[in-house]
Length: 273
Image (cartoon, rainbow, N blue to C red; front, side):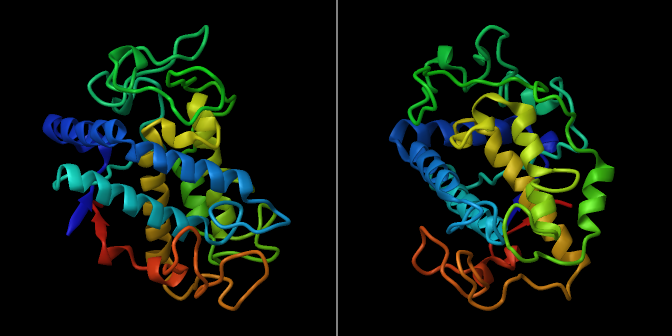
C-alpha cells in the first residue's frame, strides 16, 4: 500500500526520486497532458453551467482521481514514488523546506516572476512551459504576493468542523465543507494557497508548477480527515442533479468513474498521519 508522506519528512533519496519521475514525465510529454486537462476543466466549469472539477461537489473526488492517475504515472517511472503533501498550515513561509533548491526550488525573481533555481527552473534546461497563459517559457512564482497569509491550523480546524458536505445551489455560493475547503466562501483554504504561490499556480494551468500536486495532496488529506471525523455525513447530492456530478454520476473525462468510486482513498493509498 502506497503511503503519502509530509514533504518535510522526505529523505534526500525520496526527493530525488520524486523529481526524477516528474522530469521523465515532462520529457515524454505526459506531464503536459495533465496540465492541459486541468486547464480545460477549470476554464469550462461555471457556476450556472455544467461544472465537474471546480465550483461543485465533485471538486474533491475529481481531484482525487486526477492525483491518483498522476501518481500512477510517476510509479511507472519509479515504482516507489508516492505523492508527498505540503502542509501549508505549518510550513507557511518562502523559507520552508518545500522551496529548497534540492526540492521544488525557490521564489520567482522580482521583475518577471521567473524561478531561477532548483530542478524546475527553465535555466536548468528541463522545464519549459508548453501549456502557456502567455508566451513566456519559464515557471513563475510570487510567494506571498497575494496579500493574505497562508491558512493557519485554526482556519483548517474551522473548516473540518463543518458537518454537511455540500448544499444547493452546488456552486461557489454554497455553504458546506466542500465549498469552504475549495475556498469560495469563509476562511478560504484551497484557493488562497494558489494565490499565495502566485505565478502559474494562480492560473488554470496551475499544474505547470509541480507544487500543485503537493498542495492538492494536502487538500485530499483534509477531505480524508473530514471523512474520518464525520462518518455519517455523505457525499451530496446523492440523486441526479442538473449541471453537477451526483454520487453515482460519471465524472468527465473518465467514462467509468463516479464520486462513489473515490470516497475511500484507502483502497489506493494512505497518509502517514
